[in-house]
Image (cartoon, rainbow, N blue to C red):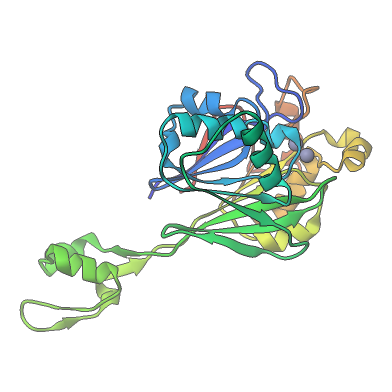
Length: 303
Ligand SMILES: [Zn+2]
Ligand SMILES: [Zn+2]
């Protein structure tokens, strides 16, 4: 099953040409999840030909403008596009009031059901959504305002062994039964146990941590994920600025990846002061080698 992260924007604070603020589109099978929705997000949904109709969840980390100013525009466009499918919007306390006020003041009457879920837990990792394909967890980050990180974990499913279909000449109903975990009876009348016909997939996972101060308490929440996005607003030489604004340095992003024993780290939310993003990547690699600094438009496949 296809599982990827597309970067729609990765800048912090002020947008500029080719450096839109934070937004990502996660594709899992046919489902699409938007994480954060800074200004310009919907422009890049078009640029990268992402089908908006497939978006079923929008997750917002916190209520700073570089993460939410694109949201009312996106909802309005979905409405204009004739959406009737429900949409689930999740974010910290205040997101409901924000979106209702902007839509009301700009005369937008949504023609599709928008279910808004507000998060308000101050510790621990909580399961907040579950579809047939994924589980979504939220955990608090440490920033200047209430902020949440997200963990998307693929559900375990049974994959039929291709040779089993041929060996036992399985028909469609038998294939469905095997995928549901059942044993089957062969043409010779012998019971074939499910374990011989199918195997469980190893669930893949993606974690998103932006914006946050360096916080080793995050490590258990994101332990062993296949792909981690962690903010890296500054180089470590500006550590005091990072602490003051409750952001992380590239080196600290690498340290979190190492502590959490993740497979791969991607970093973003860099300050506009950095034209050369490779310096951030180089610094994070001092702590965690398998690091990539993201650029707008990049797509990371989770395999
Ligand atoms: Zn931010
Ligand atoms: Zn922020």
